[in-house]
Structures are given as structure tokens and as C-alpha cells.
Image 1 (tube, rainbow, N blue to C red):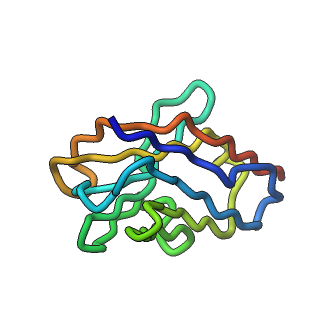
Image 2 (tube, rainbow, N blue to C red):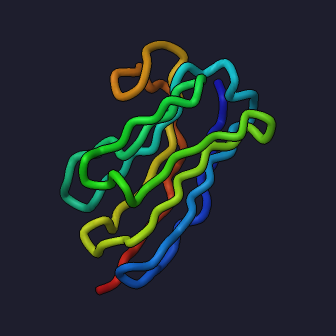
Length: 121
């Protein structure tokens, strides 16, 4: 079972930027899709962005044009660049990996422990 470790969260003012990283204990090349999710207090977990092994990306409508997902297979790392952050995007952000399925419909079986992102107004 691959281990996923997120980092890069923190406190940022509204309008600011953060870059999250997710490092896998093994090669991410074998994963069909990697993704970032978030869960705010009292809310359901939601999909933020996915990236397929070939590099195709998908984003939640709410983050399009502001968030960008990328992957570096050589470093076994997936990134989420978040720009123009909003207070309502305060949440725990999770990295996930799927070996089957593609994009938002992938079967995400491996999860990180999450990293807290707090956006102050």
C-alpha cells in the first residue's frame, strides 16, 4: 500500500496563494489518476482536482482558473497550486491515488492524512 504525505498547508490571507505537495512512498507512475480533495468542517468531502497519468486534468468549477494540479513522476509528487484563495476554501486538503478509473470517476483507494489550509478574511 502506497503512503501519501501531504505538506504545504498553512494560514494565508484571502487572495493569497499556497502550493500543496503530496509525496508518495512509491512510484506514482502506476496510478491512473491522482487527485486532491478537501473537507471543510461540517461539510462533505469534495473533489478539487484530478490529474491522469497522461497529464490530463479536471477541476471543480469553483476552482477553475485559480487552482492548478501537476505531477512529477520522477519525484513521485503531485502538486496543487492554489491562487486567489477564499475564506470559504478553508478545509483539510487530502491527496488521493487511484489505480483504476480515470479523472473524477477514478477509484481512489489510497489517501494521505491531510493538510490544513486556513484562509483568513
